[in-house]
Length: 340
Image (cartoon, rainbow, N blue to C red):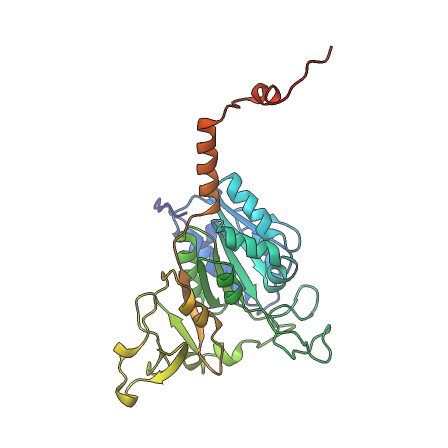
């Protein structure tokens, strides 16, 4: 929901008077700045924002926002955000959550908020660890990862956020990383403008319990060759010299080098984030280094009916033909008895 009222907000207008108590160097600081910058540019009155969080380091964020907010309980933020949005569809509702909060105890709420296409913005901070509770492995930790709860290495396959979102019939999925505030701001803006459930996975560094978890792809020395920033309507090009690209070979994506075998930019896949068929989006969301570059940007953005809009339409339709107009009608409907 974006109104573009030309309000003269700055990011500072969305900063609360609370001391930000994340560890120095935590990636959450950059994400907070990107969110505050985004809100200042959306043209929505401050009183129309509501930030709902669960439990975890990321879930402290509502304290640092000069907006309405609700720090809820572990895993339940998506359910509460759903209630807030359906009760007051005019609000711009932001669900702040982490990989443990959303995908472990909150897994069902997360999936069904996406499936129902509730018009909320879900920002999922993914540091692949439980930071607040001191370093246990999370649903997104890599197999074999050694932590306090997996001293010999976890034997579980990790959850892939994009795979879950698209599998739940999600209409919007994007990915960014904490240090790229410009990319994050652009993605958060697109998420806010999207009508329906938007999920943004933020690859976020935990300097205490999982420091450097994404260095092999986000370090500035290598990230141009190991990530690809997707833009709707543009060829899928990446690389430090913009000399690599993605093509479709049979049923699989293939990395090619421009100039080799007479391959030109015209041979590359063009990103269509609005394609209803999720096949290519699914493959893009699941790409992993070293086999592929990691996809960043808006991967999927498809229009669809939202839950709260359909609910309001249904209520309006039922009211027009309903025989029961008030409580007295309800109490005297059906089988009734008069007791002397």
